Length: 345
Image (tube, rainbow, N blue to C red):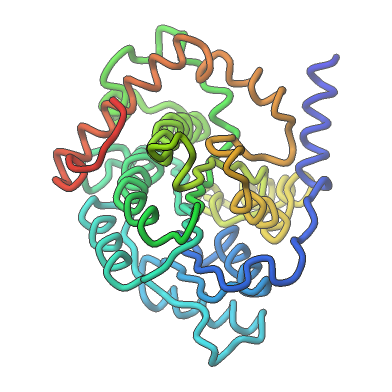
């Protein structure tokens, strides 16, 4: 009964327990970069940042046309047309070269950054092998996301002007992945899930990709620590909760599924504007909160209990170390610069 009550409490808090919008000018003068900001949560977050005084907000898109359309939407909603606060950059997360080219361009052109929000991600309904040979959600949600973080982190330390924020939009679904079962591979985890015969259901695969991402983020957080033991860059994973976003658009394969999904979203999920409020607070964390998993629908204690089996336990820590080694090895093989970036192995 207590478990059911906690679950119902989480559902209620997700939809109705929204944090307030921060005070005006909270982000005055700040320079923000958001990946995946042409729709949904990223678009809503970008709009909030502009409304709250950000000096510049760089949004990414797969095509320039989509980016410019999002820019127009944000400017219309914030009455900032002609002020050139919103800037558009193309980003292809499906390839290592695409992520590297984006990182190179940003590091060359952007002179100061305060917040990097890695929000881009995908949710597939069937097995898709990506352009680099890995299962597509692993490529985008894990490998390319980790690559961007590793390439941008040293640069953020140089131009952040104090402790900048590197924030990852993750998912609470990672709590449910069972690693202590015969079905979970003991080694070559990324290779295992990149084979079609090992692909689970689409919700399970999304959760797997988010657990692997969580492992990577936990390790990347270690890189944010400076020689004095304090964070040079404040790193946080964030789960905004269940949000009515475009992430589930691929699930609407027929009229029945589309109707059912729309009903579930209406009843259980918060708006993207509401979800974006959690994003804002995750980019306002203090140095003492470095590495902390941020969510507003579950207490810290309950979260720690929920991931005891797959993250916090000795088995979870060993799996995190193993997966991180796989991630770094893959990235080093494809982007030589990763070899020059200090990383805990």
